[in-house]
Length: 100
Image 1: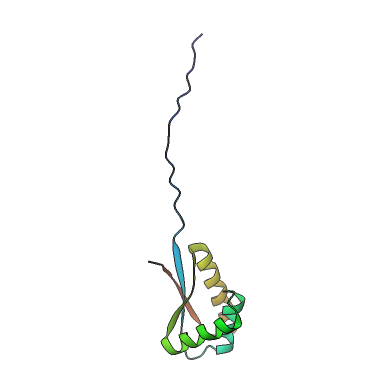
Image 2: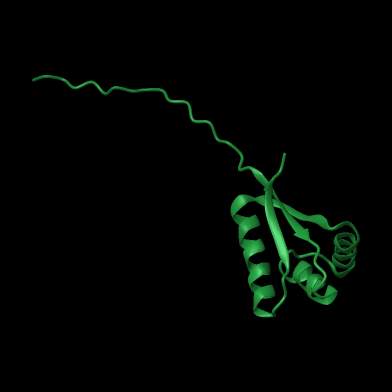
């Protein structure tokens, strides 16, 4: 009888942390401040004071990072915010960018 020897290979598996992505809110002249604050509280889980501060920063500076997340979460939150804005007739804009 022939004996079968198991071949064992050592393989090195590198686990890479998922990349981080910024969700960036952009200013427009039509979306209401109350709507923006509600998005920051409901979707991005900001407290009311932080949400007001971020909203005012976006209003004055044109854009602000509202969070840093793994890609899937960043896209999911951005999509939820944009869908809510569209449903209410606002031209609200957000983008996702790779964090450096």
